[in-house]
Amino acid sequence: MLDNFPYSAHVPLQSQKPQQHRFSPRGMARFGKRSLVGGTALLLVALCLQVLVPKLMPSASAGSSFLCVGFSDCARKGYSESGYHSHWGHMYWRMYSGRNCVNYAAYRMVDAGLPDVRPWSGSGNATNWGRAMSSITDKTPVVGSIAWWKGGAPGASSLGHVAYVEKVVSSSEIIISESNYGSDFDWRRLTKPTNWPTGFIHFSDAAIVNLVKPTISGTPQVGQTLTVGNGKWKPVSNAAIQWYADGKAIANQTHRSITPTKGLLGKRLSAKVTASLTHYESSSVTTAQTAPVAAGNLKLVASPTITGTPQVGGTLTVGSAKYSPPVHVGAIRWYADGKPIPGATGRTITLSEALVGKQITAAVVGTREAWNPLTSKAAAVGPVVWPQLTPASSGKISGTPSYGRVLKVSTGGFKASGVKTYYQWYRGSSPIKGATKASYKTTADDLGKTIRVRVHAKAPKFRDYIATYAAPGRIQATPTIRIGVNGHHRAEQIRIRILGPGGYLPRQTVSVMTHSVIKKVRLVKGFATVKFNNVPAGKRRVRVTFTGDAALVPRVKEVTTRVYKH
Image (cartoon, rainbow, N blue to C red; front, side):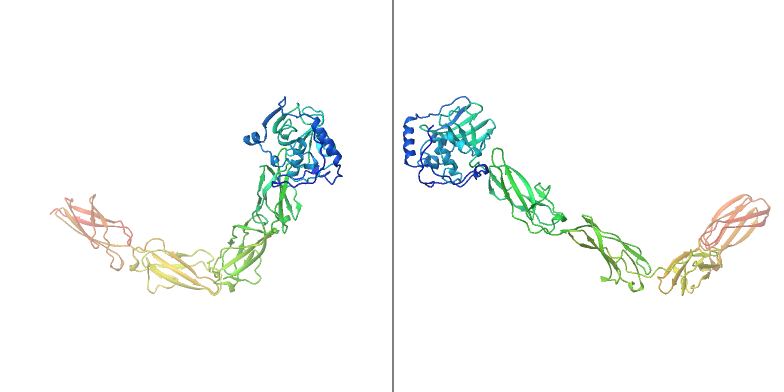
């Protein structure tokens, strides 16, 4: 294929597209100003050669199949000619203008961003491309590279051939676009080994293009998670992450999210997102740096608590609060009614008289390196009171709970000095007037009632001791039983009277027995009458049984009487 053409002045592209490629590192290594071989002589040689070489028409063969042929056919099928149809009248890299492989390949490189200056000196024939640019030519197809056939290679003439790699399907299949001398523009699918290119020239391999720069979300603070987004890339690709602190890579931080630790305090973080895709050159973008990483904020999980009794002389202890993450306990400060207690900075405090009546609380400061201290307060206890006045032993009431007996209360004794004790006796729930001493003699008014005493002891710098003691059982008396018997005509009429102290008259049912006959009769205001008939004459025993009630104890009384026949 004839493609060695003379130099012409640079003519700018008439409809330059936005840059979609970047210079390949492999190509840029050798890309520079070159001496120009040119002049009129070469132009004449080229024109002569053009006449001698026949047209190369596209034809399918084993390992090669056409996807489209001609600008209109390719446009209809959706295969781009990248604007060459309107630019082939210009000679790129001093190649002959028109439909030929070298001018099209040079156009695609200029369109990708390379200058319109041939990057080597010497022949422009296709067979010379890979030789002149051997430093960036290898066997690896990459999108945007130039497929190159040396002269005489299968699929090329003695002058070689070049085409643009549009897609790399696999290591053994590629899709190219090309313009052939004397023929037309086309897209072809090539598979190994037939007609496979001699090599691939990496002037400016297609790179992944960043459309939207990735950003970091979250708060740059110890303990808070930062996340970097992918941004937007064309084509869509995989992304690798590397985090940086003040521009230096952070070891092992290659995930999308990072949670700053104390080692990153005060440093500005950024992330480099590297997009990669098979057969494309990878592309990297680094985000803007964050603000310096601030100290973290501790989270209170549970407030501290105070244990102990809030009384003078007592000891209170404050426990540790629970934080996330765990902390060390820093300063401790005790307060009384919201005001600091001088010198009270330990875990425990002994309460003094000056704190009586005040509410006590404590504040605990949690500390952790690279985290802001967090103070938490315990719920207040109190008010502080004097200690309780307590007897040395249990108190009780001694004495028999009976009518006319003396009951005495014992408090058990107090160890405190200056104790004054006050008493009040109660009949049931009612106080007994004048009964204000340690002893009390029961009266008829107490019959059937429970007797109690309330003890109230006072001492300086102590809380009052108040207790109530009860006598066991109710107050009872022994009843008086009187029996009157009138026995005649084989009958007995028995009169019964039962009474207690102070004129107490029971209303119980009593049993009366005579001559083995028992009758029960109910007392009415302490009185009852019962009659027995058909009683044999003679002396007879009469027994009255009183079972007792709340005020009187049980009692049995017997009398002897005589029953007459007439």
